[in-house]
Length: 316
Image (tube, rainbow, N blue to C red):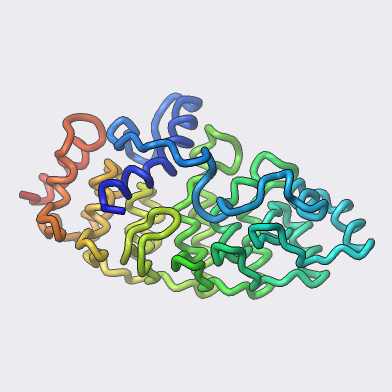
Protein backbone atom coordinates (compact mmCIF):
# COMPACT_ATOMS: atom_id res chain seq x y z
CA UNK A 1 0.00 0.00 0.00
CA UNK A 2 1.47 3.39 -0.95
CA UNK A 3 1.88 6.10 1.64
CA UNK A 4 -1.12 8.22 0.61
CA UNK A 5 -3.47 5.22 0.61
CA UNK A 6 -2.05 4.20 3.97
CA UNK A 7 -2.94 7.66 5.27
CA UNK A 8 -6.50 7.23 4.02
CA UNK A 9 -6.85 3.82 5.63
CA UNK A 10 -5.29 4.97 8.88
CA UNK A 11 -7.54 8.01 9.00
CA UNK A 12 -10.46 5.58 9.10
CA UNK A 13 -9.22 4.38 12.47
CA UNK A 14 -9.26 7.93 13.80
CA UNK A 15 -11.85 9.92 11.93
CA UNK A 16 -14.88 7.66 12.25
CA UNK A 17 -14.98 7.20 16.05
CA UNK A 18 -13.70 10.71 16.67
CA UNK A 19 -16.21 12.27 14.30
CA UNK A 20 -18.94 10.63 16.35
CA UNK A 21 -17.25 11.81 19.52
CA UNK A 22 -16.75 15.35 18.26
CA UNK A 23 -20.38 15.55 17.15
CA UNK A 24 -21.54 14.37 20.56
CA UNK A 25 -19.18 16.71 22.38
CA UNK A 26 -19.79 19.66 20.07
CA UNK A 27 -16.18 20.04 19.04
CA UNK A 28 -12.91 18.51 17.86
CA UNK A 29 -10.10 16.89 19.79
CA UNK A 30 -6.38 16.92 20.38
CA UNK A 31 -5.73 20.16 18.52
CA UNK A 32 -6.88 18.87 15.15
CA UNK A 33 -9.69 19.37 12.67
CA UNK A 34 -11.16 16.20 11.21
CA UNK A 35 -12.35 18.20 8.18
CA UNK A 36 -8.70 18.44 7.15
CA UNK A 37 -8.22 14.68 7.21
CA UNK A 38 -8.60 12.72 3.96
CA UNK A 39 -11.88 10.88 3.77
CA UNK A 40 -11.04 7.15 3.86
CA UNK A 41 -12.76 4.33 2.03
CA UNK A 42 -15.05 2.16 4.11
CA UNK A 43 -13.23 -0.78 5.63
CA UNK A 44 -14.09 -4.16 4.15
CA UNK A 45 -16.72 -5.91 6.18
CA UNK A 46 -17.28 -2.85 8.34
CA UNK A 47 -15.15 -4.35 11.11
CA UNK A 48 -12.72 -2.64 13.47
CA UNK A 49 -8.99 -2.58 12.79
CA UNK A 50 -6.05 -3.34 15.03
CA UNK A 51 -5.75 -5.77 17.93
CA UNK A 52 -9.08 -7.50 18.30
CA UNK A 53 -10.04 -7.21 14.63
CA UNK A 54 -9.31 -10.90 14.03
CA UNK A 55 -11.55 -11.98 16.89
CA UNK A 56 -14.36 -14.40 16.16
CA UNK A 57 -17.90 -13.04 15.76
CA UNK A 58 -20.10 -13.34 18.87
CA UNK A 59 -21.84 -16.45 17.55
CA UNK A 60 -18.54 -18.34 17.65
CA UNK A 61 -17.56 -17.36 21.18
CA UNK A 62 -17.47 -20.08 23.79
CA UNK A 63 -19.51 -19.68 27.02
CA UNK A 64 -16.29 -18.86 28.89
CA UNK A 65 -15.37 -16.12 26.43
CA UNK A 66 -18.86 -14.67 26.60
CA UNK A 67 -18.73 -14.60 30.40
CA UNK A 68 -15.26 -13.02 30.35
CA UNK A 69 -16.35 -10.45 27.80
CA UNK A 70 -19.36 -9.51 29.93
CA UNK A 71 -17.29 -9.25 33.13
CA UNK A 72 -19.29 -12.08 34.71
CA UNK A 73 -16.91 -13.34 37.42
CA UNK A 74 -19.40 -15.81 38.89
CA UNK A 75 -20.11 -17.23 35.45
CA UNK A 76 -16.39 -17.61 34.78
CA UNK A 77 -15.92 -19.40 38.13
CA UNK A 78 -18.78 -21.77 37.40
CA UNK A 79 -17.51 -22.67 33.95
CA UNK A 80 -13.96 -23.25 35.15
CA UNK A 81 -15.24 -25.37 38.03
CA UNK A 82 -17.17 -27.53 35.56
CA UNK A 83 -13.97 -28.35 33.67
CA UNK A 84 -13.80 -25.71 30.93
CA UNK A 85 -10.21 -25.11 29.86
CA UNK A 86 -9.05 -21.64 30.85
CA UNK A 87 -6.88 -21.48 27.72
CA UNK A 88 -9.42 -22.66 25.15
CA UNK A 89 -9.31 -20.70 21.91
CA UNK A 90 -11.88 -19.58 19.35
CA UNK A 91 -11.34 -19.87 15.56
CA UNK A 92 -9.16 -16.74 15.59
CA UNK A 93 -6.90 -18.19 18.28
CA UNK A 94 -8.21 -15.80 20.94
CA UNK A 95 -8.57 -16.78 24.59
CA UNK A 96 -10.98 -15.61 27.29
CA UNK A 97 -8.24 -13.46 28.81
CA UNK A 98 -8.05 -11.49 25.56
CA UNK A 99 -11.78 -10.80 25.70
CA UNK A 100 -12.14 -9.49 29.22
CA UNK A 101 -12.15 -5.86 30.28
CA UNK A 102 -12.76 -6.75 33.94
CA UNK A 103 -9.80 -6.78 36.37
CA UNK A 104 -11.48 -9.28 38.70
CA UNK A 105 -12.11 -11.67 35.83
CA UNK A 106 -8.56 -11.21 34.54
CA UNK A 107 -7.10 -12.04 37.96
CA UNK A 108 -9.40 -15.03 38.24
CA UNK A 109 -8.41 -16.39 34.83
CA UNK A 110 -4.71 -15.95 35.58
CA UNK A 111 -5.07 -17.63 38.97
CA UNK A 112 -6.61 -20.61 37.19
CA UNK A 113 -3.70 -20.90 34.76
CA UNK A 114 -4.49 -18.53 31.91
CA UNK A 115 -1.30 -18.14 29.89
CA UNK A 116 -0.11 -14.60 29.22
CA UNK A 117 2.08 -15.47 26.25
CA UNK A 118 -0.55 -17.14 24.04
CA UNK A 119 -0.92 -15.37 20.70
CA UNK A 120 -3.92 -15.27 18.37
CA UNK A 121 -3.64 -15.74 14.62
CA UNK A 122 -2.42 -12.15 14.23
CA UNK A 123 0.29 -12.80 16.81
CA UNK A 124 -1.40 -10.54 19.38
CA UNK A 125 -1.06 -11.39 23.06
CA UNK A 126 -3.64 -10.49 25.68
CA UNK A 127 -1.47 -7.50 26.62
CA UNK A 128 -1.48 -6.20 23.05
CA UNK A 129 -5.26 -6.62 22.90
CA UNK A 130 -5.80 -4.71 26.14
CA UNK A 131 -3.22 -2.05 25.30
CA UNK A 132 -5.15 -1.35 22.13
CA UNK A 133 -8.29 -0.78 24.18
CA UNK A 134 -9.98 -3.85 22.66
CA UNK A 135 -13.32 -2.32 21.75
CA UNK A 136 -15.05 -5.66 22.19
CA UNK A 137 -14.79 -5.10 25.94
CA UNK A 138 -16.21 -1.58 25.85
CA UNK A 139 -19.84 -1.09 26.79
CA UNK A 140 -19.91 -4.30 28.81
CA UNK A 141 -20.05 -4.71 32.55
CA UNK A 142 -16.73 -3.79 34.18
CA UNK A 143 -15.09 -2.84 30.87
CA UNK A 144 -11.75 -1.22 31.74
CA UNK A 145 -8.94 -2.33 29.40
CA UNK A 146 -6.43 0.00 31.09
CA UNK A 147 -7.01 -1.66 34.47
CA UNK A 148 -6.70 -5.14 32.99
CA UNK A 149 -3.47 -4.12 31.27
CA UNK A 150 -2.04 -3.24 34.67
CA UNK A 151 -3.18 -6.62 36.02
CA UNK A 152 -1.36 -8.42 33.22
CA UNK A 153 1.78 -6.38 33.80
CA UNK A 154 1.65 -7.18 37.52
CA UNK A 155 1.80 -10.85 36.51
CA UNK A 156 4.86 -10.14 34.34
CA UNK A 157 3.31 -10.10 30.90
CA UNK A 158 6.03 -9.29 28.37
CA UNK A 159 5.64 -5.57 27.45
CA UNK A 160 7.85 -6.03 24.39
CA UNK A 161 6.12 -9.04 22.84
CA UNK A 162 5.29 -8.26 19.22
CA UNK A 163 2.54 -9.40 16.87
CA UNK A 164 3.16 -10.87 13.43
CA UNK A 165 3.53 -7.39 11.92
CA UNK A 166 5.75 -6.08 14.72
CA UNK A 167 3.12 -4.22 16.73
CA UNK A 168 3.93 -4.14 20.44
CA UNK A 169 1.58 -3.22 23.27
CA UNK A 170 3.07 0.27 23.34
CA UNK A 171 2.36 0.90 19.66
CA UNK A 172 -1.11 -0.63 20.02
CA UNK A 173 -1.91 1.70 22.91
CA UNK A 174 -1.20 4.71 20.68
CA UNK A 175 -2.50 3.52 17.33
CA UNK A 176 -5.93 2.35 18.47
CA UNK A 177 -8.56 4.96 19.26
CA UNK A 178 -11.26 3.62 21.52
CA UNK A 179 -13.15 5.73 24.05
CA UNK A 180 -13.21 4.33 27.53
CA UNK A 181 -16.27 6.04 28.98
CA UNK A 182 -18.53 6.59 26.02
CA UNK A 183 -18.17 7.99 22.52
CA UNK A 184 -17.96 11.65 23.62
CA UNK A 185 -15.52 11.22 26.51
CA UNK A 186 -12.42 12.45 24.69
CA UNK A 187 -10.51 13.57 27.78
CA UNK A 188 -10.92 10.19 29.44
CA UNK A 189 -9.80 8.45 26.25
CA UNK A 190 -6.60 10.51 26.05
CA UNK A 191 -5.93 10.04 29.77
CA UNK A 192 -6.38 6.28 29.45
CA UNK A 193 -3.91 6.08 26.56
CA UNK A 194 -1.34 8.07 28.50
CA UNK A 195 -1.88 5.90 31.60
CA UNK A 196 -1.43 2.74 29.55
CA UNK A 197 1.74 4.05 27.92
CA UNK A 198 3.18 5.09 31.28
CA UNK A 199 2.36 1.69 32.78
CA UNK A 200 3.98 -0.12 29.85
CA UNK A 201 7.09 2.07 29.99
CA UNK A 202 7.38 1.53 33.75
CA UNK A 203 7.23 -2.23 33.10
CA UNK A 204 10.11 -2.04 30.64
CA UNK A 205 8.47 -1.43 27.28
CA UNK A 206 11.03 -0.19 24.76
CA UNK A 207 10.21 3.49 24.04
CA UNK A 208 12.35 3.38 20.89
CA UNK A 209 10.42 0.52 19.30
CA UNK A 210 9.72 0.93 15.59
CA UNK A 211 7.88 -1.10 13.00
CA UNK A 212 9.69 -3.12 10.36
CA UNK A 213 6.82 -3.04 7.86
CA UNK A 214 3.40 -1.48 7.48
CA UNK A 215 1.22 -2.95 10.21
CA UNK A 216 -2.37 -4.12 10.47
CA UNK A 217 -3.19 -0.72 12.03
CA UNK A 218 -1.52 1.03 9.08
CA UNK A 219 1.48 2.16 11.05
CA UNK A 220 4.18 2.79 8.48
CA UNK A 221 7.44 0.92 8.09
CA UNK A 222 10.00 2.41 10.45
CA UNK A 223 7.37 4.29 12.45
CA UNK A 224 8.32 5.00 16.05
CA UNK A 225 6.11 5.48 19.09
CA UNK A 226 6.82 9.22 18.87
CA UNK A 227 5.60 9.33 15.27
CA UNK A 228 2.45 7.42 16.18
CA UNK A 229 1.82 9.82 19.06
CA UNK A 230 2.37 12.78 16.74
CA UNK A 231 -0.14 11.44 14.22
CA UNK A 232 -2.59 10.86 17.06
CA UNK A 233 -2.11 14.49 18.04
CA UNK A 234 -1.89 14.04 21.80
CA UNK A 235 0.80 16.47 23.04
CA UNK A 236 0.90 14.60 26.35
CA UNK A 237 1.97 11.41 24.59
CA UNK A 238 4.47 13.33 22.46
CA UNK A 239 6.09 14.76 25.59
CA UNK A 240 6.16 11.34 27.27
CA UNK A 241 8.23 9.88 24.44
CA UNK A 242 10.45 12.92 24.02
CA UNK A 243 11.29 12.59 27.71
CA UNK A 244 12.48 9.03 26.99
CA UNK A 245 15.21 10.31 24.71
CA UNK A 246 13.70 9.46 21.33
CA UNK A 247 15.40 11.40 18.53
CA UNK A 248 12.89 14.09 17.56
CA UNK A 249 14.27 14.09 14.00
CA UNK A 250 14.35 10.32 13.45
CA UNK A 251 12.91 9.28 10.08
CA UNK A 252 10.71 6.36 9.06
CA UNK A 253 11.34 4.26 5.95
CA UNK A 254 9.84 7.00 3.78
CA UNK A 255 11.91 9.76 5.34
CA UNK A 256 9.09 11.27 7.39
CA UNK A 257 9.77 12.67 10.85
CA UNK A 258 7.35 12.94 13.77
CA UNK A 259 6.83 16.59 12.84
CA UNK A 260 5.67 15.56 9.38
CA UNK A 261 3.23 13.06 10.89
CA UNK A 262 1.69 15.78 13.05
CA UNK A 263 1.66 18.39 10.27
CA UNK A 264 0.09 16.01 7.76
CA UNK A 265 -2.69 15.16 10.23
CA UNK A 266 -3.29 18.79 11.19
CA UNK A 267 -2.41 18.18 14.84
CA UNK A 268 -1.19 21.63 15.78
CA UNK A 269 -0.73 20.91 19.50
CA UNK A 270 1.62 18.07 18.60
CA UNK A 271 3.36 20.27 16.02
CA UNK A 272 3.98 22.90 18.70
CA UNK A 273 5.30 20.32 21.18
CA UNK A 274 7.74 19.00 18.57
CA UNK A 275 8.84 22.47 17.48
CA UNK A 276 9.44 23.34 21.14
CA UNK A 277 11.62 20.21 21.31
CA UNK A 278 13.74 21.63 18.45
CA UNK A 279 12.44 19.44 15.64
CA UNK A 280 14.02 20.33 12.28
CA UNK A 281 11.28 22.25 10.45
CA UNK A 282 13.04 22.19 7.06
CA UNK A 283 14.08 18.55 6.74
CA UNK A 284 12.68 16.77 3.66
CA UNK A 285 11.33 13.27 3.23
CA UNK A 286 12.04 10.90 0.34
CA UNK A 287 9.41 12.70 -1.77
CA UNK A 288 11.11 16.03 -1.17
CA UNK A 289 8.29 17.29 1.06
CA UNK A 290 8.79 19.34 4.22
CA UNK A 291 6.39 19.51 7.14
CA UNK A 292 5.29 22.94 5.89
CA UNK A 293 4.45 21.59 2.44
CA UNK A 294 2.37 18.81 4.02
CA UNK A 295 0.57 21.35 6.19
CA UNK A 296 -0.25 23.65 3.27
CA UNK A 297 -1.81 21.09 0.94
CA UNK A 298 -5.19 22.53 2.00
CA UNK A 299 -6.16 25.97 3.24
CA UNK A 300 -7.84 26.76 6.52
CA UNK A 301 -8.62 24.77 9.64
CA UNK A 302 -6.01 23.02 11.71
CA UNK A 303 -3.61 22.59 8.78
CA UNK A 304 -3.36 26.38 8.54
CA UNK A 305 -2.60 26.50 12.27
CA UNK A 306 0.15 23.95 11.77
CA UNK A 307 1.56 25.98 8.87
CA UNK A 308 1.55 29.13 11.01
CA UNK A 309 3.45 27.41 13.84
CA UNK A 310 5.98 26.03 11.36
CA UNK A 311 6.45 29.35 9.58
CA UNK A 312 7.03 31.15 12.87
CA UNK A 313 9.66 28.51 13.69
CA UNK A 314 11.55 29.26 10.48
CA UNK A 315 10.07 26.77 8.04
CA UNK A 316 10.57 27.72 4.40
